[in-house]
Length: 444
Image 1 (spheres, rainbow, N blue to C red):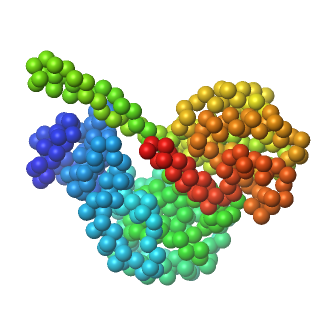
Image 2: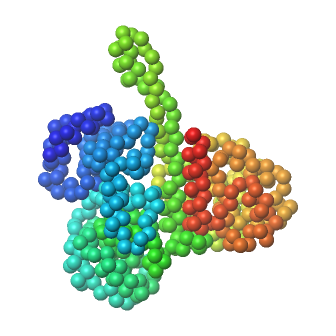
Image 3: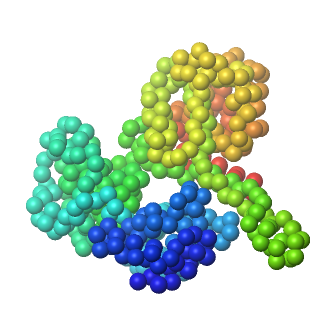
């Protein structure tokens, strides 16, 4: 079993030997390993002892199990796209697609990774899909008023495998359920919602099901539905509870990968000894993966009140779900030499301090940008320009309907200072795409 595995992992400077294989076999005998995703988790626990080894471990895992070679300084996504494994998977997916609409390459990569990392590590019981569906009436009336189905545990401890159920059957049942559903549902095996083991929804345990909305936390969906009959998020609607998860998935796409050149001490020493004591410095690239965001919110005035809660909820979920650094400031209408770090706007932070962070921060300004012309004076414009000069990845997200922007005296002025987008999932997607484009352009 996997006889050449230790050799591949040692090539990446990781400790792996025959004992590793014996421990992996014991894990399989105990039922801890059922999928490739399980192998990834178990081997990671056996082989790595330091966070510094996580990167080499992933590279070794993909090389051995999927024949994906990650070159020095290359991202996993780039290596996947050019790999034969991914191309063959993509071809088979194209043969199976029934609507003729192939997702873009980023979504395909995400879907491929979802399938690779399907894991039953936290699943205690696998239920039979045929048995579940035979007892389930897709036409049952929705009588629940609560957000959560009664009696459903917060922790997902069971899984239903729908991979043997045809996509046509799941779609047919889902249409019937959608006609009856009145509100949100979490958990359970019937409704379109989140958590649980229903074949339609997100963040649950249902391999082979249909992901609807959200980010696919269970990493088990067979198909992502973009059809408006099913997908609950309107990409053009202003940010609200119904589309926060869609916006969250988009924000996850912020690419904050930086590289620095550091001295490769082991190579320098080894090569120096080989050269008879002539030590020439060898350098290597160290990649840093992180998401850094500065959020500036207009929380003053009646016009912004309806949007503050949704914005705060969005970025709070981002902070708990993705490892990153989020700094939040508040202002009223516009800024004058600084902003405030508290909601009540009593703790003033000078503009110089806000502009003193790492230049790789992505800065989002949330506000309607509509005010009396006298408020947007030279001091205010110069304050915004300080930020645009420091942070190239900056975007103003405006909750006001775009068709009204040019009826404002101040919005056109601020649009000339920095890029402005609607505060919608579609607008956030465009802002993130432009930020990523600027990051790649700045590296060339």
